[in-house]
Image 1: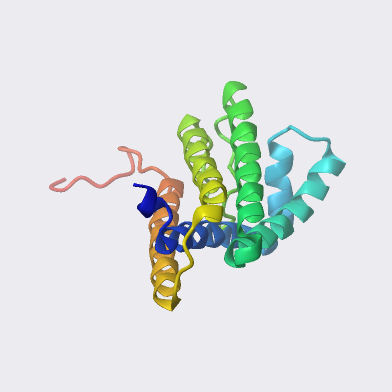
Image 2: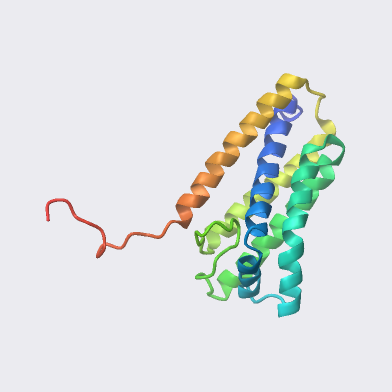
Length: 186
């Protein structure tokens, strides 16, 4: 098990997945800044002026984390920053779920699809936080890898991200109601 945890391919896959997650989230927020400010404000955790500042700074921080994860010398601190951000996101979601405010959009990816918050989303963020913490903890012990490890790890991380993103998008689709669904044979 120790050798698996030191495998550079595993580290590159994990770092690539997290980098893609943060880069995609940041870019989608940057393309809809006013909408994202509304999402931050809708969480009702910050005063309006602070929510605007957070909405402006957060995508830049996410891009910095994404870039840092791909630079070996910065990967461990970037993974810690990723864990911190994911933990804060999870906490913000949990506070609103506890308040009964599950109709609000999580703001994860600004793509026109509303992703309502839930305990499942809190759990998802806990898993992502654990992944980032794992990356930070394991990076110092990683064996140096070659080009094949880098390429394969980045490809694996990209595939994992595409699966994750696809699941998120499917979760953001509106549910079909029986009254509007067509029934075969009617």
